[in-house]
Image (cartoon, rainbow, N blue to C red; front, top):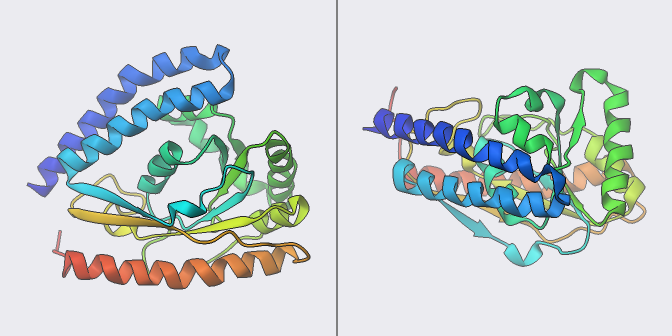
Length: 248
């Protein structure tokens, strides 16, 4: 049954992209905020089908920490799920993402018109410069930035590996950062399309952090010091809910 649910959800996801994305692409003539709100129609549909078909619900905590003013969200990345949820939850913002995402048929094309910050991860130090330059421009437009400080999805419980790019941007912009902890990887595993664990996953926003006078390294460490223990706590909650993992 788990594999059947996963297959039905993925089929539903594929069909919805085929129907929705061509319409979304037509909104490229509209201001970016209008494109953003139109994209949320697909987000709501996808989360509804994830709950109905996949049996996964999302609990959101700390919503009072979501800011209408420009901030930088430092997000623990475990799954495709948080990218979907946050796209439908936060005020219009810009993701920091690898440019290769744009090559994903339909999904990547739709994401490209929402004005993200696309970087070449193989570019080394120049990738950090790209994040800083484009991020300052987006913040200057009044948009928040969402960044995965580890750069890629991490298996729940694996050692953290925070990169400096988000800290460099936060130091240059001198805007608050908002840390975000998750346990989504327990329900929708990283780099996997198999959704075989039912239950309620949690995404939790921490209080905004003032970074005035801090270096990029200190900002990164400050974010990590909140995200990691709170992610561990959420993972413990999730594992208690799920019980022992079943062999595949």
